[in-house]
Figure 1 (cartoon, rainbow, N blue to C red):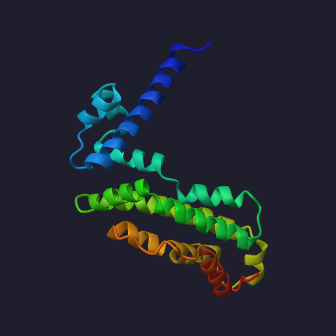
Figure 2: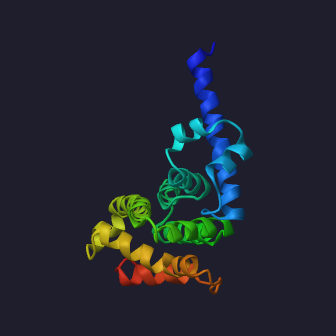
Length: 204
């Protein structure tokens, strides 16, 4: 039997999901600045008080939209690492998934909204981006630390390898997100992974 509290919690979860979906649609179609919280409530139902209770502000709602809509680098690294593939295959699959995640139109649009918000609130955007990238770097560093090939090579620390890998794989996609200019989508991620492995003395 569900208690009254269980039912209330379930309703709040459903309301949170509805707010995020409505806000995502509004942000992408109307833009962040032109979207009001009242419009989000009108789309999703519920009340403004509940929205404030869940997200505290429009920027808090934007953070939730981005987190729920986009696949985090941390998730990608963890999922691929759990497959137990050879190092070359693991890194190639990670690179392909990063490319796919950055290349999605909705993800690019949301990230550009975050970048635009940095004009008015650079602390909010810096905290969001740094925390997200830091979690991904930590996860990738842990992946490298657990690989016997890295321990045998001993040339770079797992933390250094994580930073270099992200710089090599994600650079063009970040430029595309910032500029809004569609770059060459034929980037050979497998070639870049092999280049990374040779440079890190991890070639297999």
